[in-house]
Image (cartoon, rainbow, N blue to C red; front, top):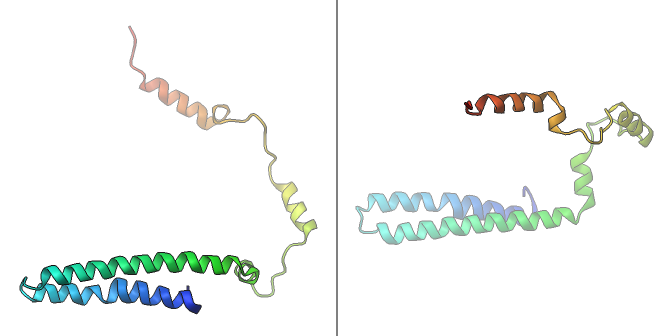
Length: 128
């Protein structure tokens, strides 16, 4: 949204039609003493809606263009200058250091689950 066709649509639509034009129209409607209020307010509202529509359209279309460009993704996910990406062997070594998933472990099996059960028992009305 910073460059290209959809960047221009975003800037003109959002900032121009959605923000910059409606503000002076609303101020002019207030200053006019009420005689121009209905048509200027309607025009300002229509411009605001058009700005919002152009913003959404530009975001979706720019996303499509970005998704079609693999180099844009690579540039976004590149490491810091001078930093090498980890090799598959380094990634595998990091993965082994992570705790393994325990099958069957649920919240009821943890200290948090126990604390919730205790709190629920305290909240139950006393019988008897």
